[in-house]
Amino acid sequence: MQLPTSRGYELKCSHWRLEHGPQPPCVVYLHSTTGSRLEALHLLTPLLSAGFSLFSFDFGGAGHSTAEYITFGFNERGDLEDVLGLLNQILMT
Image 1 (cartoon, rainbow, N blue to C red):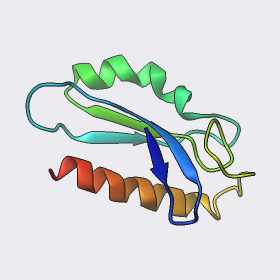
Image 2: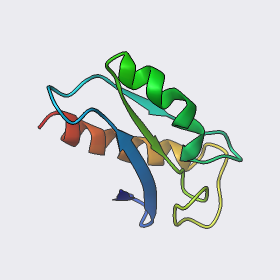
Image 3: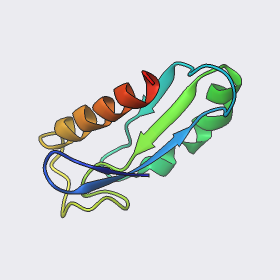
Image 4: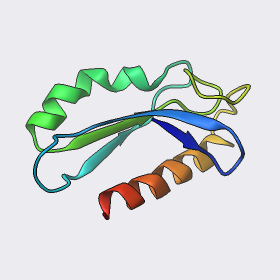
């Protein structure tokens, strides 16, 4: 999925969850400065098996997101706030 950010670019996101039943607790994975959301794949099976969903995203400037560069935390904080706002909407419906 794509998430438009408050700063005008788009984050590429992945949300894995079981299709049936109530919304489970969600783990948000934050990748390394040189990584992408795919770093979270090793957690997918253990988390789903334990009853959690997993959300991972490419910070702006990383992976397939549409910002020019990473800022080593300065702008990434805003990316996380945008993601948490989206998850709040998804998980509360």
